[in-house]
Length: 301
Image (cartoon, rainbow, N blue to C red; front, side):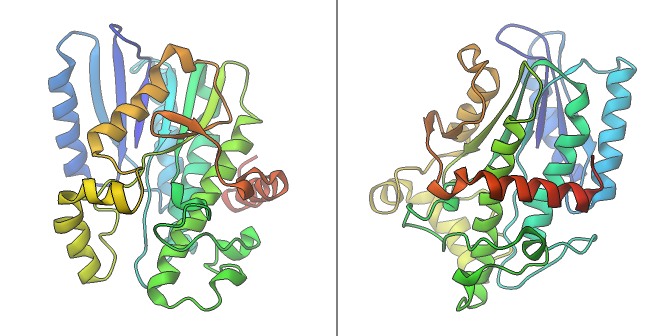
């Protein structure tokens, strides 16, 4: 997860990496600091585990303290980038929420609502979602099976998942949580202050990133050792929305920094393109219900 703090082309920037793995975070910090090439450009890492609401609160408190003490610049951007797929069985966070919803949605929800008061206009929030939330995209995992939000946080999907085996269940928990991310983005866009924007971003299929590290061993092998080498075939026969990490990273950076997008809010981007999300994702009643239940579960007002 990246928290871009004050950046535009040619200007100083400060990036906070909010990470669960301290070793990987430090490696990323060293790489970013090596790319800065000028004074006033700096990256640092802070500890955050989205599977723990206590960790989210502690991170937000620490970041707010840094901003208040002027040890880092004011906050102008927030990217919610974490995502997990749980494999072939339901798993739960330390707070007792089904992991896909606990990490992909609820952890981000608490983080954003805690940090909204210190977002300084102009500011942007980007929630990384997935095209798998859209049933119209036939290729890929099974589509979402929405249910009452309280049930979803317990890992109970809607009727569409009634006949799912373990493999399909894990994938559908993921796609349903990604639909929640789109609902969250649109509800957030209706609430942010003037000068703050909120958009959803689909990075596309990026083979080799480790998203399927909890999948069954054969699928893990294919995802890690086969798919990264057959991107042209995937684009031709599965979906054109297949990218390298660098390509999707550039598209995400554009969404956060391009001056032409400074007033764009409540939109959905597939890579560089603004498109419509799924038909069901514009259900305002569902989005508002999800927001209210998320407030209760995180004790956020």
